[in-house]
View 1 (cartoon, rainbow, N blue to C red):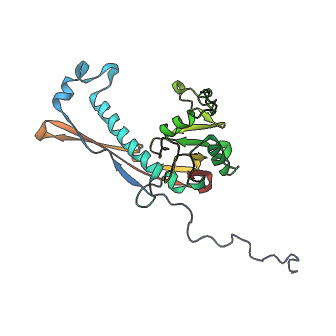
View 2: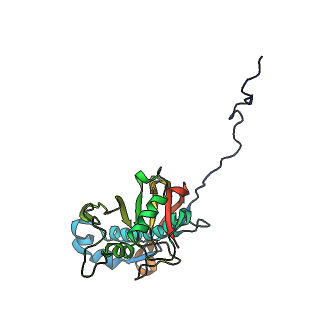
View 3: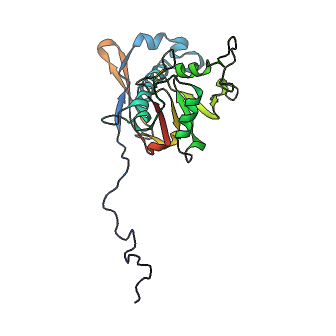
Length: 250
């Protein structure tokens, strides 16, 4: 048999099966709503014989409040979690872009977008707190007496009543109040006030149990003549492609 003239290796890559899996690993961290107690009197004395207007029960309203409590806690972890013993926030896993110790402006926001590789920009969006977004919307031309905002299309493309976000430099911008905010003068030392990228590369895992990711425990409290409610959920999160999301740093 003649040898390959190209000098190619006779062993085809991939002939040996892998002995281990590499890459991001997802775990599960339990979040608790903490318990709430509802006395029997509350259950009996609610509107319409135990129901609110529209047929909602007191228990249903309490569960909704507990679920919202878990969601708020998880959002903080999904934003800033260290990834060590807890969920990894996208701020922790993202790639940094440094703008220097200056006040935030629209040019810096544009530079941040272009710091995200072109491969991920078509599906990208911005994320910032309400305070930061308000600051950017209040930037004016700088001409004396001219109150026209530089961010002209801030809410022309968006519709809050329909859940359509505004756009900045053509990208949607979403509110996340667990992110840091700019100071009143627009500076942001030691803070991550703006992020841009393809957030589909940030994976959130919700562990499902019996078809639902939420575990609800309702238990009797005879000594107090009522019931207790508590909710749990197990989740994890990780930035799968760190370069897909870019955070602004000083």
